[in-house]
Image (cartoon, helix red, strand yellow):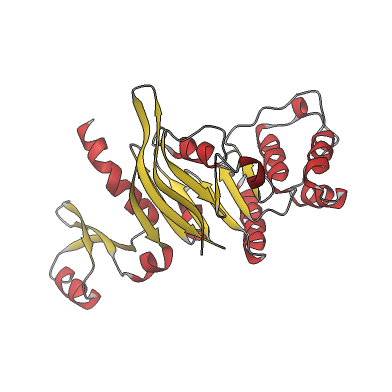
Length: 278
């Protein structure tokens, strides 16, 4: 069952079309990654989903509710974390979380549990926290309530590798409870490792929708080799691996690398043309 649906959604800022007629759907219980270059339309799409800005045309439906008309109702089933959060610097994390808990109805134990999990000192003022710890504040704020739909914009930027791992372990637990997670990230390796599906957006248009299971089993390899005379070649191969090895054995090789297709490969494929033209 689709819990997030975008139908011919567009968003314009004056004459600039930031998102151009995109349609897609996300099923209940999925973790879906949303990737693209800076300015591709990721944050504009996400902010429209959570009713911070309005669609210019088309519509967004979440859990059967319209993102504009039913915005108040949606707040009861959805949590959102922006890529950048601004706080009153002289309040502590504890004071901030207690205020949030009054709206969500969750227990104070949830705050303590998440703070301990992310190793955050909630007694410190926001102004005393490092960038990484401020990111933890934003994550905890988004996860204080047990939401059915969790929308996250660049959640792991600024976190160290250990905390990135702990973050996704927690997200997997929320998924196991039935939550649907939609997140943007520039970290393509974490997207590949933890997401069920990946949406690639370029210049405001969706250019691919990858099923991670299909990507892993389609047996597409990138082959790079260097011969003894110094010539290097890279090619895409999706046939019988034995035939590939047979052909490569005829060459006087210095080095050889064969790797399976990744999300990064798919992402770069769509942007390589731009890079070549620059």
